[in-house]
Structures are given as C-alpha cells and as structure tokens.
Image 1 (tube, rainbow, N blue to C red):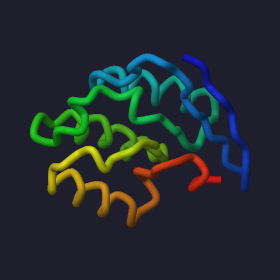
Image 2 (cartoon, rainbow, N blue to C red; image 1 turned 180 degrees about the horizontal axis):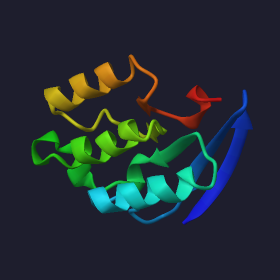
Image 3 (cartoon, rainbow, N blue to C red; image 1 turned 90 degrees about the vertical axis):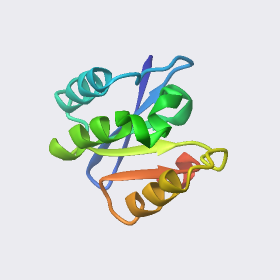
Amino acid sequence: MNIETHNGNNIKIAEIISEEIILRTTEDGLQLLGDLYYQGFDRIIIHEKNITPDFFDLKNGIAGDILQKFAQYRMQLTIVGDFSKYTSKSLKDFIYESNKGNQINFLSSTKEIF
C-alpha cells in the first residue's frame, strides 16, 4: 500500500494506492483511520477495488460500522469507483444521501475531487 499526498485549500488528503483489498473489517478501517489521522491527514481517498465487496452489501453492517468510525473522528472519506454495477436500491439511496454531505462521498473519479 502506498499513500499519495495531495494538498489543496489547507487540506491534506491521503489517497490510498494499492492493488490489494485494504478494508475488509471494521478493525481495518479503524487502523487506517488512526494511522492517517496521526500523520495529519484531513481526508482519505480510497478506491472501491481496495474495499471488500461485502462492504457494498448494506445488510451485513460492515459499511455502517466502518463509516461510523470515520464520522466519529470527523475524518472525511471519499470512495472512488464505478458503483453502477451495484443493483441494491438501498445502496444507491445510501450513496445518494451520503453525497449530499461532506463527511462520506462516493465519486466516479478523483477528478471530481480536485
């Protein structure tokens, strides 16, 4: 796993670069959050391919547990990927509602951030 640092508008952003799944469990999310928080990052970008597919099945609670940690620590999280492949109405609604705020966002590319 590599971390690419982006700076803009007095915000330090960590973009996770990896070919592996980084987030499988709530503990993985908390570890990543803690590591980057203590390195002074204000926001984290992680790509959908680096998150377990189970995250996108809202019934199992993995997404809720992980995202709650980010909200508690007020660390902004952007998940970048192609979410059109997910057919769950509840997931689509969740993404829509998340994107109304600033805490958790689901975007199709990093170009939408910068």
